[in-house]
Image 1 (cartoon, rainbow, N blue to C red):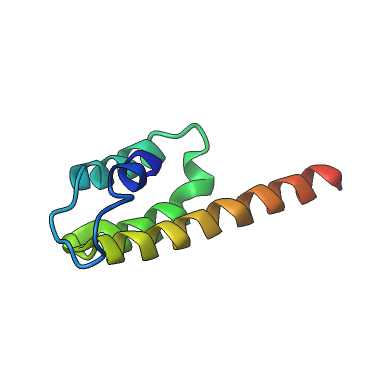
Image 2: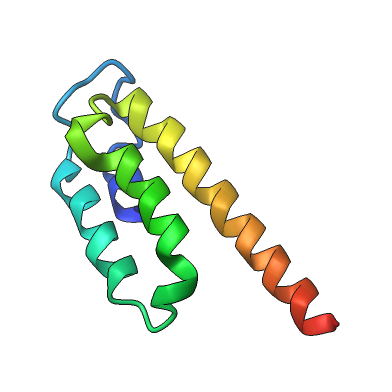
Length: 86
């Protein structure tokens, strides 16, 4: 995700067919193949709903998706550290 973001850092938000857009499809197999597969089923379903059917069409759409994705990662990181503290 970060490589797509960096490749499009200087790109206008309205641009469609942005650089490395094809890499979005790789996130789903990575989650599906994770060792924590059972605990990531819900995440897979949410991200699949975001990515499928070319819902991310422009750089602006991708940036919104990145904010959402980063929020999920931050939540997971916080939740995991709180769980370890208990």
